[in-house]
Image (cartoon, rainbow, N blue to C red; front, side):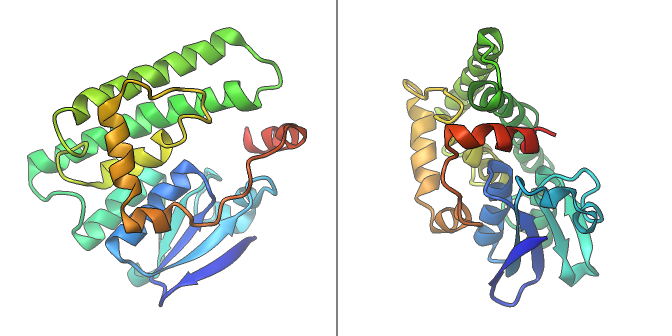
Length: 231
């Protein structure tokens, strides 16, 4: 089903692909110093729909993890994985009620806003067989609006919840792909600063390359990719 890459004595099995949602978890694992084994799934081949993966994530989407250290406990949904890993290690998620809530609020802002809206912008701007100007404009404008919310927040604090947290790890892989969605970050100086600062973290540089990215698809391959991914 998947290619394997071992990182030290693996505690966590990571089922992933080179996507923003996948990179959230590999970045978190690197930041937290947890040993893990990568199972790189080919989305275009349909690895995520195979029975052995559906036993881990019945929704057939990446990422997912299996914690060998906890009786082979499986966790799916990227936000749930980040919370699980933060609680397991006691890192990047405050213990106090207000601090924890602040992180989870910004994590949910990504999960319910930035990710879904950028995903739709990507679909209509890059993959849709018919270019629909209304749909492209609607989602690109909404992504830009969400970026402006982030920029205003980052004018007040260094990171989304104050200190660096799983909220930043979740949001950064999506925002860094703004060009692919056709959305500019011009004029959003605080957001650009945040993108640069996080991108310079050694753990982020390692995690964003897990698994290694494939080249951007040519126009000839877009239809095949679209038909297999958008299901």
